[in-house]
Image 1 (cartoon, rainbow, N blue to C red):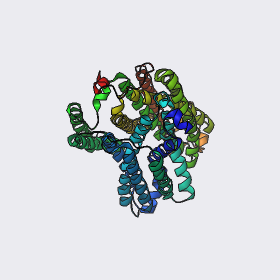
Image 2: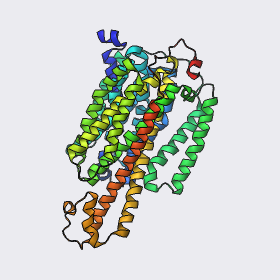
Image 3: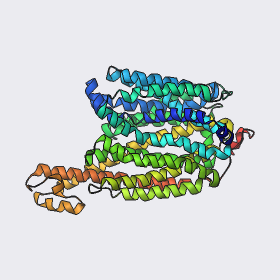
Image 4: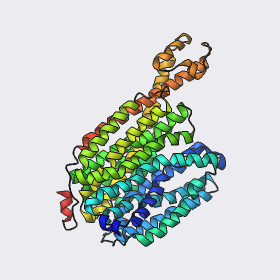
Length: 512
């Protein structure tokens, strides 16, 4: 009771909310390590089995925007409870799947629940917590969304290596059932609101537009950015999303209220957070690729390397939230982005001679910067929105973050691959057997790769391929430096410490 008196929400209610979010975010990354095992079990190819990941990402991206309307129409607690049930059911079915096609279908069901859990959980905590404690509460909530993506590969690596891959889905079932009962018992009722007529044109154009965009981004590295398929997807995405924007700006009751972006603090915070998501998700994708394919680490070793960074982020989330309550978002975000920028610059020089501990240290520093900046910015944006519009604001904020994360993975993956291919082509044009001795000038040593015969061209090409791969990673890391600078600049416009716009203010206050 003392916790509830101080913060406005009971500790058990907060645990129930955060646990659901943790499971949903965890399942966006936990499958990646298990892909080779699934290919063998289901006797299918990589292009097919990768839809286990793609289907989840697409579904979350398409249905997050509708969460605000559903929370308004049926009540946040009721929709959170329903989302938990759907997610747990989908998880159990994924574990029991008998084929590649069945697990893809069940992942869609699981993802529909996951798409609603994050924005609605944010709404619940924001609505129940006291304004002066909201930064701390949101910081604790942020532990789930920042820690889960890093913890997922570690957990999955251990399970796949020592147990059955099906456990990565089954583990959600007992935890989820407990969470369902906790949510029903401890989360207070949040009354439904007058949501108006459902925005069907906006929903249809949104789903089609985001499907084309996210599918195009996920498939572009495989099919090629200039292929007819990808160009067609992006053209369709541009047409439907442009139509969606027009509909939402003119509709009396839009599904995704884009007019909220007229508030400077909300707009600036979303730009900063979205750009940071590009850097964060891109690095979470690139670094494991380099560690496993370049340095030969196992999935479990890779997960253990990123674990300290995740722990630091988790520890800093509530601290940054408490600092936000006292000082506001801007100074905390600036410090966080400067720390993140310093570490990102260091990662530009990442190469095969770096030690395990050195990579871990820089990654921890980078994670600390993200832990400082993320939740103050999210909370500041939400504080700029009138209380009756929190459901819609949460849906919009999470939609932008999801899309940004997908953009980050696609762009940084393409930059790495393209630059690596160009580097390899350049090296093969210039190299000769006699130039083997010069490789060490790039920070690599032929003895490391077992090359003892200078006439062995296959070994030479292998070394050049590794060098080109390293250069590709460095090019992608340069992009993360650029986007971190953009996020830093955007955070300057969040404004000074402000309090939440209360429910008594008119809707128009949000758009002044």
